[in-house]
Amino acid sequence: MSSLSCLSLISRGLLNLVYARQIQFRKLHKNNQRRFACRITWNNGDKDIFVGNDAQAIAQKLRQIT
View (cartoon, rainbow, N blue to C red):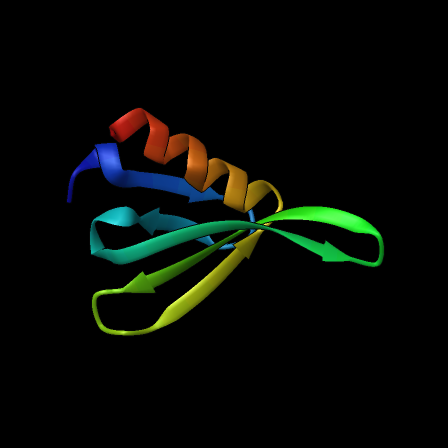
């Protein structure tokens, strides 16, 4: 496991992006508020959605490793 691809999220603990097959970002509008969201499809087909600070942390980590 590469430490470059790991990050710690406040709400979900340790996340390893090596196992991500696809990562998508978008802005959500809910109750007149804009939120940043990230949807990850993992190698096994499972999908997770991250919003707010977690989504921003994932985006920052991807900028660092790419």
